[in-house]
Image 1 (cartoon, rainbow, N blue to C red):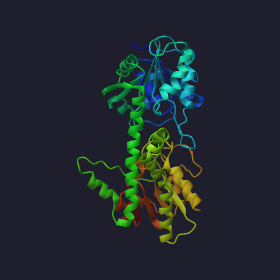
Image 2: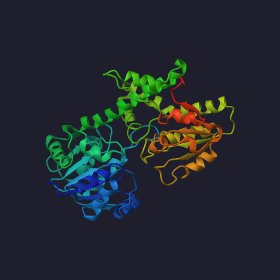
Image 3: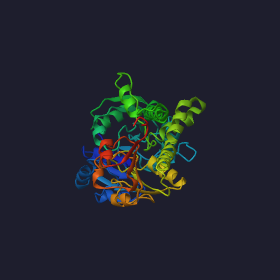
Length: 422
């Protein structure tokens, strides 16, 4: 029976995981290098936004089953949930994983289980973690056990998916996998599938790469729509009525800590064998520039010079406060390169994290010549365009989240990414 867990990394995955175990009767100690994040947790204040997290955090801290500090402590299980970003040259940066693993070595004792939850390139457990763990002096696979069990959740629905989703567990040996399965059975109701660590690493990266390639396909179709005089959203909807077709949707780019990052792991490993993956990454990375150019074309068609663009949405997806790898910030950069002014607003990002950001939607309306919707927050879907008016009354929706009829009835010229039909 697991009596204690030490979770290293208290971000969008580590904190909900720590809180979930704590709410299921396990003593959890959370570790983060950011003292402000640690202080927030100790004071039951959230540094990330996630439905259901506040009440679970309150319960865990009040009951004394969740503590937090900047240093690890002894435990039965160590879970590593730190970032695995890419370098400027799109190669994997695994220093966070290596340093997190090294940080727990002084606290490891015989019989411990070490689990990596971070999404990483295949062979990371073997090539990065195990060389650090052997420094404990304990034999890997008999005295300490090691596994990779990647998170498979989406921000905004983390707690639901932690429980309901199937889980992949890859052990360095059978015993490691079985111990990890036993641990997650504390709260996981989905099936838990056992394999080796490298296969588990590959599976998670494959899942996100599949989505990236599919989105790239949709983005290529959106660009083609102009030549075909079609609404690509309508065409995709009809195509998806086929029982074996599931085309994703286009947008201003791909963001987040997974889909915009993980395919590069396979490009790096695969070299020239990852041609489709590499092309898809380049296609999706081209969309912010394409979006900015389309915005400029709308302004040119309306003979508007020296325009200010009112950007709606800085988060990488709807109804979250997560700006990691957000295409919105790149779209803004591209707009500014074109000489355009930008003012931005995001109701979920409560402090100004971007130079163009304001906390007031009214300020955006007052300053903007055109509204550019880049994130499909519910707040934007619910906007009543009859209650405000930007200069020139133009809106460009890149997420197909605004009601065209409502905006046109309010006198707006309505543009939709990938729609030349209307």
